[in-house]
Amino acid sequence: AQKVTQAQTEISVVEKEDVTLDCVYETRDTTYYLFWYKQPPSGELVFLIRRNSFDEQNEISGRYSWNFQKSTSSFNFTITASQVVDSAVYFCALRNTGNQFYFGTGTSLTVIP
Amino acid sequence: DTGVSQDPRHKITKRGQNVTFRCDPISEHNRLYWYRQTLGQGPEFLTYFQNEAQLEKSRLLSDRFSAERPKGSFSTLEIQRTEQGDSAMYLCASSLGIVPGANVLTFGAGSRLTVL
Image (cartoon, rainbow over all chains, first blue to last red; front, side, top):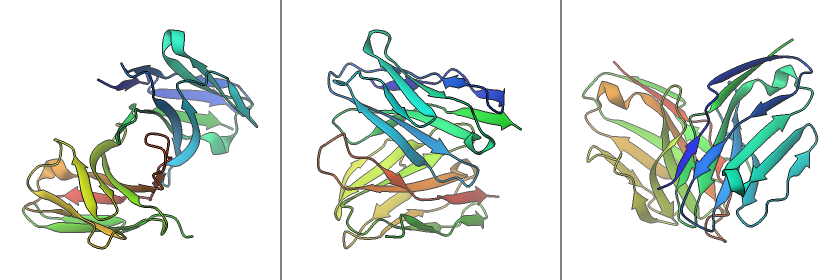
């Protein structure tokens, strides 16, 4: 069975603070893909990143960075120097070689100016 | 490329009525998905098409739900005899399926259904 857990329901930070969103996943598959999506108040899910299970290299894109650790089945997302525009709900998702995405319940991030 | 379009964006209906949602995917995308999202939850898979073939349906999709993609382009999701529990955001997504599992979903803005 596939499962994604985002234990943090809501997080509030003050602008310019760093924040890490946690994601823990469960799967028995050896080949799988992990994703992060952002859902701003407008509602449209926006793709942020995809990692495959064979690539544990961490990735940085501007103020965003991702830490993938297979040993702890985690795929955490850090926003450095947060901005008000980062306020959104962030979803972590898992997909095996099948066709279904398994989404976590999301973390609602509020960045206070 | 205008992205994934969904219509209507909002629908309010009375219990027992039928509703239909339309999704226009990105034109070159061969795969189309329907998801349902309720408040405070992540999207839940409903069904998936590759071209015009409906290849997978979730157990969440009761007999009152039907989806079509007749020409492999746009898709419709119909809910018959709506119930209050059907109130949710219905999300459509599309992708270009080359490597199974790896393809990224592009989502539409969703169709919000409220059943009174």
